[in-house]
Image (cartoon, rainbow, N blue to C red; front, side, top):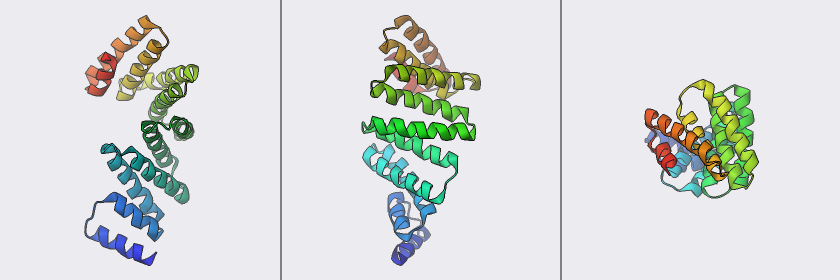
Length: 201
């Protein structure tokens, strides 16, 4: 423990920015606050490199640290959502859906309808992957109820795009086209090339 503390202090003093390395030594040093900070940064870095299994491992360590230090609900919800996203990318949909449910409770508690709506939208995707179609459609509609009053946001554009997808998957082609047209307009207005690409698909 003492050596890890010395190494962590030396690395940070010399400006080392290898967050995975810093998280490792922070854990060895028993510095849970530093573990939370560096593990989240290491996870984001891994995700940006498409190293999604590594990102999952880092976010798991961050979640354990958040629980250990009694992190505020917003921080815990952010870690839960990020971990759920990475789990989906490695096809662990059941755990991703469960963690989204935990995050949703926290977003409701902190009173953040934007994050709640976006988390619901992502939970809808997990539910669809788990062949729970009716629940998936209900979740994306609930997300829209939360997001519509907040104006034309990227979160709304993505939710409308996902609504188009649920209509398409349910054989509701006219409704799918109406939602897709609206999502394309929002995506164009907001400069969301990824959303526009999905909509055109």
